[in-house]
Length: 234
Image 1 (tube, helix red, strand yellow):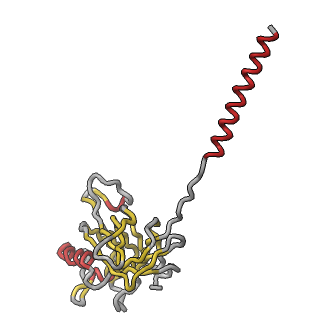
Image 2: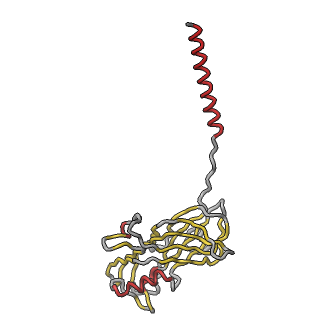
Image 3: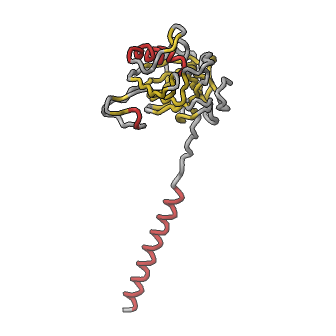
């Protein structure tokens, strides 16, 4: 009986030793791969320029734009680009000239010359990131709130549009530090045509307002390096 008991204890000891060694070597062999920190942020800011409107006929207080498929193009190439973020993301402009970060991510180190994105109308199957971009009447890409001649309005655009914006100068992005690109938006320009205001209450003006938003005729969208996030080009 003693010999059997001794053999049993030796067996248990051997098993425990093997398990212990397995755990030890398992822990010793595990490695953690350091992850790269995000090296690019994309931000938005609104100009509070009311285009010389001394009488404050038009006062905007909120602008929201749904943005999708943000890409940046390499410098010194024809049209090679890298994806930044798919989205869609809500760019919220509160008309106080404060810079709001839309998203951050990792892109290859290099020099970039322009940015592309889509002003995006939600499709029926897409998740709604903000409840104001969908209602019983449809889905939207841009929402503007404010007052026109003292009367409160909410303007909703149903148009999608691709924007391609050249940087004033090439932007260098490094792997080990963060670079910020700010999108400057001038929403007051959307409600002006031939020097006159477009009444947002009048449905006949919707096409002109939407064209002002999507065509960037008057450079109402600009993008530039803004590492200190003060809304001014570095």
